Image 1 (cartoon, rainbow, N blue to C red):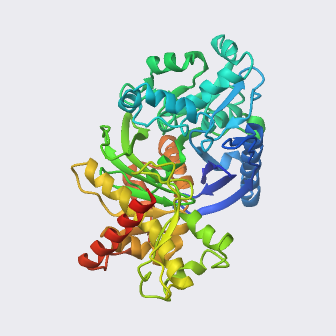
Image 2: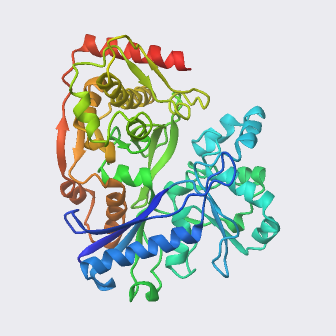
Image 3: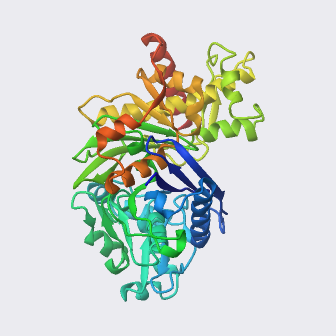
Amino acid sequence: MRYIMALDQGTTSSRCILFDREGNIASSAQREFRQYYPHPGYVEHDALEIWDSQLTVAREAMARLGVTNRDIAAIGITNQRETTIVWDRKTGDPICPAIVWQCRRTADYCTQLEREGLTNFFRDRTGLIIDPYFSGTKLRWIFEHVDGAYERACRGELAFGTVDSWLIYRLTGGRVHATDYTNASRTLLFNIHTLDWDDEILSLFSIPRAVLPEVRASSGSFGQTDPALFGGPIPIMGVAGDQHAALFGQVCFQPGDVKNTYGTGGFLLMNTGDKPVRSTQNLLTTIAWGFDGRVTYALEGSVFVAGAAIQWLRDELKLIDSAPESEYYATRVDSSGGVYVVPAFTGLGAPYWNAYARGAILGITRGTSREHIIRATLESIAYQTEDVLRAMRGDVTFALGSLRADGGASANNFLMQFQADISNTSVIRPHCIETTALGAAYLAGLSSGYYRDLDELSLVWQRDREFAPQMEGNTRAVLLNGWHDAVRRVL
């Protein structure tokens, strides 16, 4: 068995990567699929398009390498989180479009729940805030708006799942309806302390247990693929939501280990060990993974706009022609010249959680140039990350380790060095920045015997470069004060 197959099902595309034992990419394929916006604030996917694109790229990746099912030790699945799908158990057909994590259609209901004083009720049980982001209110919406859905769910005719469950169901020919701890912990329906669906929440939302998937460890058996799909069966041995998989792929196995995925947004997760930490700093408490009979917990903070700010420079402001150019222009000036960009295009995420804030460029003078604005935009990504790191430091008693960086924007050396400077911590970029897919491969590799243990994974993981802090403390304090003043103005 020469390879592990990672199925990386994202918000805009489906990918498949075949990894060898050293964690190198042996083959990959990717395909985009359509996004649907039927009403303002609504975001939908066609679940069958998701399935077709994922199956297609899996076959393409195998064909490019000329391998068969016998060459693949196991499949690991990682997925866009919170996206909600309901399908007919008998036919396997969805009963309505998938409601995407970005969709805000249940915002009014979430506001109602908050007004009823249920914020701490949900936080204490699920570790989450009340928000349309999570799956529970989406599922309730489907039962209220799709004719006969609730009655059919009560009779056991329907199945609910996040994207991982949907792929597992289709891959196994309908034999397995399951999810893992990480994806379950993002539904607003799962009690992260009892490790079971919460009956009181289910009753509040009028959701029957019969519709829910079985919850399993992130590293373990999820059945075998239908032999007709790949010429023979392949065991599915690892499942995790995308950010949890990235934490595992960065080998953040000890409490205090932190990773940030610099993608469209920025997603920071910190390993907090075998006990959940209730945040007092507006962070989310979530399950990092389930492995070897144990559950590991994490704190999470989401930055709404990270790499998207670089796209804004390119596509809307036309200040750069390509994302890599931002590094060149940022290094043409010694500082941002007192300019701060607060990229609150869709509000501010953790730790502010202000959906109504909007972006601003502050500190402009007659001497402000294109280079200053570009540099300030890159710096804003690091400032927002530091805000979440500061919140994490306030929530735990142990020290945070170095920050491990992945995602497309982590290739920007200026950004990584400024992050190290402004956070006064080392930033480590791995050799393989596809750590989401790599984490899914690691989880599947452990339970299939492809890898021996966590120590072996730590040896497989390779760093590309470490950025050490070089900024003086006084300079750091002045810059952070300026940033927080800019944020206050936006708020």
